[in-house]
Figure 1 (tube, rainbow over the protein chains, first blue to last red):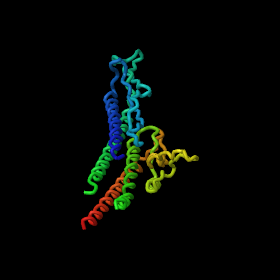
Figure 2 (cartoon, one colour):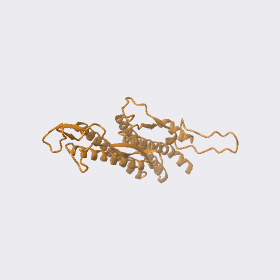
Figure 3 (cartoon, each protein chain N blue to C red):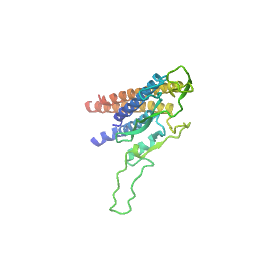
Figure 4 (cartoon, one colour):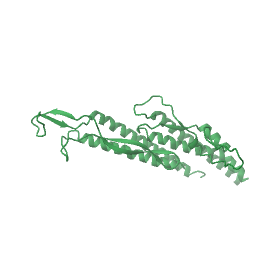
Length: 134
Length: 135
């Protein structure tokens, strides 16, 4: 039964999407974190999705291949009174793009929903198959 | 007698198997809607069913050429493995992904309904067989 594989496929996709949602939450929460444990401003994180085979019937799920740091330049804010300011008065702020993160969040939650619906449909089909001939 | 019973149910059983495989392929497409460079796939239901009913591999499937009597025939793969095709994207995307979410979800729903149809037909056939047996 390939239908059983759909649970693994949808499950892996939901897992990947929730990890994406997690990074979005972390990025948004740290949008103004000018310093951190290593003394540098927070760098936005992005997940990288990769297709991964599930089972032996050619089903393809999703896994998170890597969580990478956003290479875009850090924001420089002029604030000479800030203790973190350099000798020219600029403070390095995180490179989090709030608009981009919001879009990412909506996209992740929609994809998650599609996978939930897919699982529901599959469950209905499987239950109907189980009651065959009754 | 048993052979006839088998023949009666065979068509919808084969159809159900292919619907089952197609559902899995479509699920993979929807799951990978956000994966860069993922290419959406689908199978040709008509060709796969014809192949399954004739016991031959689906169109586009591969068989080993036998040029001497000692050669093995080889095992042609399931229709879904040999007959998997790539979708032609209607609109390209920057990350190389060819999944069109609307088309995939429509196909998923359509395939689910066809699956249910085949199930219903098998159920009806079983019911009519039972009616004939019990009189």
